[in-house]
Image (cartoon, rainbow, N blue to C red):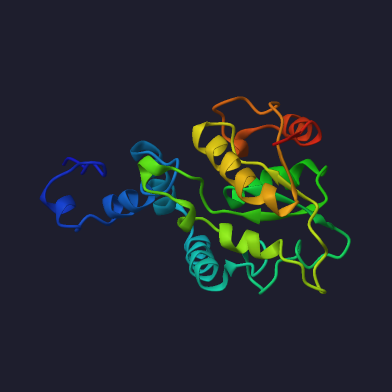
Length: 215
């Protein structure tokens, strides 16, 4: 008696009747997950204990329901203002602008930066249809407005990845913010040109922040 191949395609898979293929297909839609990795994850879930799968399902549901964007920095948080923006011990006069939340996590891991952040949720990519209106630039400009309850912002550090899109975003922000009298600097070339910030090691990010240059 032959056993069915869980990775096979066919009418059952095409109709969505194969739960393993359906799960694998959904996992493959996540960033950085290919078809083979997705199938390995799906098979691991099949073999997992029910209590783990229940906890996983609850975690996925709660993270989608409870997380929203911080009113100040636009990073993901479960409260109105995240713990970094509400921390009076941080230097609120310096804002590090990053493309994605994972970039903020990478920089925070270095332990060298004690300012606050702003997450754009993307970079300028005209070919990909991403323009200034698609990024959290307006909320960044709002943070530069002089208000009694705000600490005046003295420096914006643009920490987008050193590739074409990241450099274009940095240049755009420099031209936009420079006339407002706020210093705009760019992280140094300690991060490899064309590389992604989230994959840089702690020492490289530390050096990039310390050796930043004015735009």
